[in-house]
Amino acid sequence: MGRLNADDWARAALEALAEGGLAAVAVEPVAVRLGVSKGSFYWHFPNRQALVEAALERWEAGTEEIIARLEPVPDPAERMRTLLEWAFGDGRDAAISFRLISEADDPAVGPVVGPVVRRVSERRLAFMRAVLEEVGQPPDEAARRALTAYGGYLGLAALARIGAVTESPKGLAEVLEELGLRAR
Image (cartoon, rainbow, N blue to C red; front, side, top):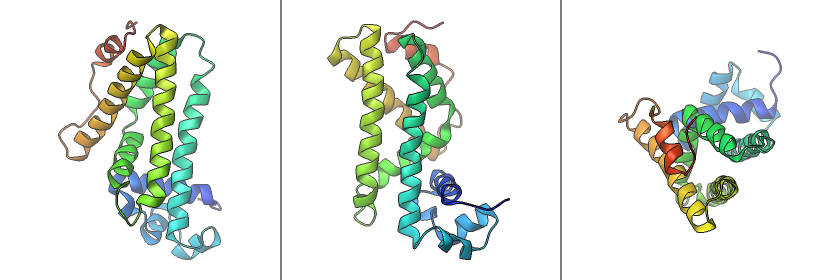
């Protein structure tokens, strides 16, 4: 591996978080994941909290990157289909989302985690709600359906964490129908 930067550490911290929660975001295990000594960590971060904050910033930026890639899609139904296919096809983000939401009320990390998780969740829900309104759903119904879809996404992450689900369901067409979108 070439020279690492702070974003490489943040991405590796997100991978660790997806697998083991915030407790897994420790300097030494993340260094091992990157194949470097933990001494190189201190070139980029003063402490573990700074690494956690960088990972959270990376995760939040990822949401904005996805939305930016979807916004140019002219057909709102296609935009929502693509969003759901990406969301339900990426267990890593669902695991991160679920783990962060689960730890947001922990007094040790909640003050750092809580605001980020709230912003990301609100942004995701607002984007979905706006797309559903564009498709023709009334605002209250669009909000309810966006919340149902996002809750299902997080619920699948919870079930995957305990081993009750090993892959995303194949019934994406039914999810789209429930949201008021016609399947292809």
